[in-house]
Image (cartoon, rainbow, N blue to C red; front, side, top):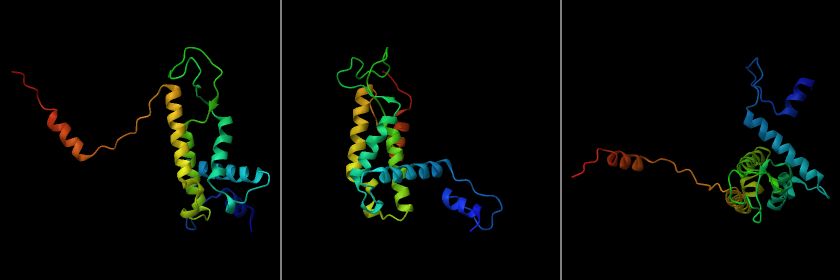
Length: 174
């Protein structure tokens, strides 16, 4: 095997046989590969190491909690005088955490990577209901602590659009 082919296998590069120029992975694909490798390394570093075949949602939850130490989002604790303030006027000693949106995106990438690496949807630990509950709790906790309510974006429907148009006509007063 040539060193170039070995490099492609390690990096997960996808070259099409008819193409002369190498296809570079998208930002998403690169991030997904880095996240997957980090998770696999995390499992290997456990004492005793956890084989992927024995990995379950508890290992995923432990991994997410482990990542909190590298977070950059200030999450005020309930006793903090800045709890619930989106822009506190002074620094405080509350911990930095991973932002909910970052964790949500990470789980999405790891869920896809698990299945791309031979896992089945039925055994995917990243698709567990416990993971969804954890993410919801993190989202709610962070939105309360930072005073920024989370509002789910509603997809516009044609029905709603039509009713808005009919009510936006001229208003007549008598």
